[in-house]
Length: 319
Image (cartoon, rainbow, N blue to C red; front, side):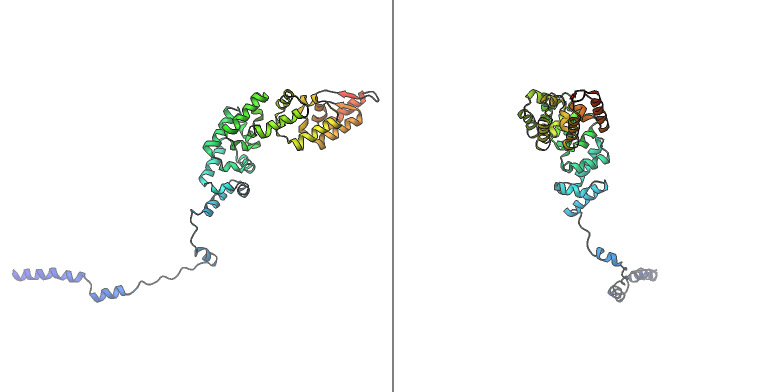
């Protein structure tokens, strides 16, 4: 029994030595390095690119490139927007996306958005919560622009979206309503982006300087609010001088028909007035200016054929 136990003890000691490899084998195994893998062939076109680390996504150049690519993907002229309004550099991509989403939400199509941002890139950096949303709410609720008509108004005057309600839009609305007497401002909502001090009052003062009473000036602007948009030096003055000096008309005609200032002096007013003078006919301003060319000539021929020789026929018919 003791011999058996002794053998049994020897049998337990053998596995212990068999598990551990010889020391020489260990050192041999560790001393040999792993066999290197053959290098992967690199295309000559890619070698220079892959040799440089990619630009960090937080770099200003990378962020600007992202913003420009985003605008280009929508068909928006990013170069024009950037050069016209460099503050885009400081805006974030998420802000740009939020503004584009907002423009979609007020029923602007992608074509509308391209036009609006080309005309007024400032919209891209206008605060959404403090300026853009309040401006749209004001147009809908206070100026009573309908939702269907809102895209048309913004296509014509996108700068409305960049105006402060308190400092700009509401004072202009009150001036048009209370001072001029325009009841439905929605029909001339594009004027709401104008300044009362630098746009409206100087034109009111101009008409009073040239002989109109304040009441008549208000009547003219109420009948034709677009009169506020015309340049005094380039439009109002030369047309008024021609009206008084060459045409010899009375001021009350302009009070009735202020749309006279909307017609081209060289292409419409002068040629038609000269034709009337040659024919000996004096047409009212609406008859003389509003008709298409063929109808105007027909009207002139009818007037000439119905008048006596040497008689000057005055026609005040309103088209």
